[in-house]
Length: 423
Ligand SMILES: NC(=O)c1ccc[n+]([C@@H]2O[C@H](COP(=O)([O-])OP(=O)(O)OC[C@H]3O[C@@H](n4cnc5c(N)ncnc54)[C@H](O)[C@@H]3O)[C@@H](O)[C@H]2O)c1
Image (cartoon, rainbow, N blue to C red):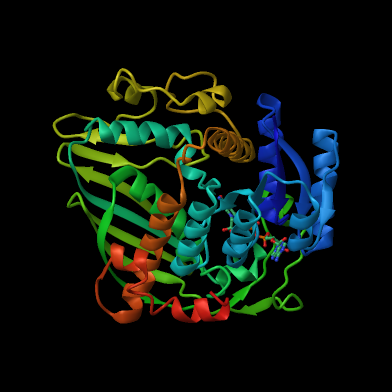
């Protein structure tokens, strides 16, 4: 029986989820989109229009989440609102006996995330965090190569992402507000954290210096591909102004110690002017891996090995993977079979909706089986804790342990966010 699901949040990513849903429905009949919900009626209608056109059935439209939960017969919700609402809707859904898939980050703070985890556990419902990057087949291959020890024992990692200038990302002001989205270190940083933890295992300690350099950000024309996702929505923060006052930390220079002993330079800034820099390398005892670019299809891992000339990339990497390495059967459905691949031909939009379709099917199967999904509450919380560890360390001017951030023993930076959100 297909699960009746509602899409909650019909902004840019909500529309992308719908495209993922449409992609999913071409292969599987495990989910039935019965409703969409957004406080912005226009955004909800736009997504319902696309759903009707592509799925042949119009979902009900709601602008009030509680009313939707009370009136629709739902098995599951998919939360794609801005981050501060994830735990609010998650807790309400669990109390009503409804399963939850939520966009990353799992919640706005660690305390909100712990509440979400407790509510899921108490209800026995499934909670899946829609972390898409790791699901890319090129990331799966990179992980298999690392686990196989192709570059030996990982010792050092350079993870640097600098750019942004003074532009408001996706013209969504909430992202750059401390109490609504947490700024780049949380909103985009949590993807980076998830990948680092996925590739390298748990983190023990973080030391960071952080700063807020751009306190005014500007709405600017988006490239056409992004405008196609975000053009139907209107911003709800300082919407009348091109210039938006923002308050989330925009820069973090961190040093991360993994439990394995590996050391990582984790540096993120969205306040770098007129230049952008991206470095993602893992340096092991036998060689170096450049980490792949999720949803690119072409920027797979690259490996250089001690004593060997040249860079190994593309299909050369397949020979280094363990002989029994296969893509899981859901991924195989969308990427031409279980054989691992080192590249694929898809536009960003195709790759994006394909990874979302994989998430949907994994969620449906987790609900069906009662088994935890790959990115469950704890996995989602670890990624958020690593991102918050930078902010907490920057706040207190001292190293912080990941466990202390996970369990709320260190939460100075998050205190005002919890207070603002009534957590
Ligand atoms: N995994 C990814 O690659 C990825 C990419 C972009 C965004 N995201 C995540 O998706 C989420 C949404 O981001 P976005 O870019 O779509 O932002 P957005 O602002 O475009 O969309 C958010 C939508 O939520 C709606 N909303 C807010 N409060 C609501 C409420 N109380 N009830 C109903 N609807 C409400 C807003 O009206 C808006 O339409 C965020 O958590 C973000 O971090 C993930």
